[in-house]
Image (tube, rainbow, N blue to C red):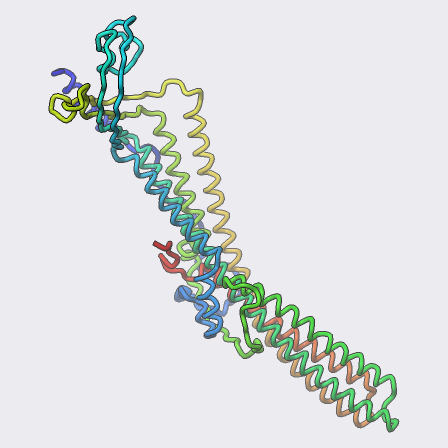
Length: 491
């Protein structure tokens, strides 16, 4: 006994001195990023680069109705709630991975009535590997009660960092879940914004269709009156009737599309279809072209949820390599048991009933059939996959932002030319009406001018809505300026 204690002490000290956490600590891979977005897009992007996007970036559109819809969606959308519930699950996994660092204690109590075989020898059970106890050394043929209360101890000393690397991996995986929740919320906000602008585009198209229908009905009345006095032909009347029917046919189709888009928006904000009442507002009444601060390209690595999620998975894979390496080294475990044991209940809780056993055990893997090698190969391969996924995610993010900046720059020029085209088409239509009344052109010229105005005006509204949708997509591509903790798990 005197030699055992120093020997155990020397063993502990030796293992402590040579112990080290296996695997390398995570370091972010080197990533080449452009200095500015103008270098990527090759066009002078009309955006501010001196600051990051705001966290509540949708408020830059200065539309209270849109803000209310987005806030309602964040509170009631079921995909967001599911993502937040996954955060709670991830945080529970951290606690589970950390538990191995602490001693595991279990309290047990039992009563046993024991009858020892007459055809045996006292202590024979030791030869079969049984744990020493009263039933092993009892006299053959005796019968007695055994009252037992014990506290069991098991504690694995994490010399090689297997448990700590597992906890590190669990923390990184939970961070990836949190970033995924942010990505879900960001996508939801983008979807709500685009759906809202689509509804307002349909409102304006309905307004254009109704105004066009009214103008054509008025023209039809004029043509019919002129035809009765011989100043217009029956062909002019029929052509005008075709245009009236064409304009009238647009109204129910646009109404159908608006109702379907309303249904989509209702699902996004967590409401049953048919419960949202949005009054009609033309797109131009809600348009506010915000200033979009994009920040520097390098800031995208710290802001986009998908990039941060990919990096968190890379960190987890790196930790799993260290965890796999630790399996090649000896596992040191301290086990023990202590409690009260007595054959007489009246003496159960006396000092003489106390017993204990405690000591370390070392398990050294010798032959595992390649399990440890396979585990390490799997972890290293997983890390390489996550590394390539991380780099690809960054490239994809830069491409998305560059594409949207280029598109927004082009949309501005396109809108300017379309507004000039609409002004010219409206002037041509007025001139055609004047010349027709004077008998200088036939009515076919008037019809052609009206069709041109309708097409150009509709295309202008479509372009305006597309540019707003691209602004929303750009905010999403930039990570929306999210602040840490913007999406939190409910306690």
